[in-house]
Length: 344
Image (cartoon, rainbow, N blue to C red):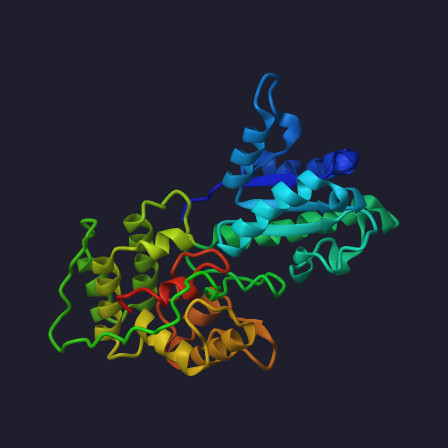
């Protein structure tokens, strides 16, 4: 995929403005080369309705940085408006939230304590012997997160309850309220009918699958799914776009994979395995997700880590029921939604 600039939103207390400015300086190289476009409320123009400006930028952000201090925790606006909206977007898989501990405070019982914190070990920036070291560590963590997000058109990232890792397959989250599991569709012996509600030509995907060119088929699947939902510029699917994904297209993609892999690969096959591992539709359980990941070859239980996309694709001969892996979703947004689709 082409490189995409990610929008970054600073959520902070004005009493931490100097520390925010220091962090912005350390991020300046990423902004200069077009990797990110950063925004904070001091950029609001005179005469602008500031609340609307903040809301629009917060709702558009790909990456939300929570600059944590006692003043941030005490701020009603930060807590009731910005943090509340950040939580909603994070849990829907629309954005990634990274808490950054600026000053010592009692943050351990807050919602964001379950996320991977920066700098390392949650050591406040002001407690470091050299603050430049602290900000450098923070930028390195942000760069890793950005790298994963930019690659999400090929494969998603790990759940928010674990430290970010490279190119890990999507995770389940309690988005869909229906817990009943529709039956896996039966695939006929004759070739799949290439139906699309959006005019997508699936003949090339069928050719790749027929020739067992799994990696190329996997990447083309991601491109088709982005085109179906008009999210090619974003490079990933959010929960809402998966929920309204056309039945005709999802059925065509799934049955092509199932048919040409002799029922080895396909989203419906993954759904069946998810349920066999004790998973529930629309309900996120990280322990179940790890069991599922180990079963299909995405997860190394011995090392407690997730395979990169390249590592997995180089070893598909040993993988079971794990393709396609390229569903382009953000963290927390995928399997709970996709697996509950009526055509799986």
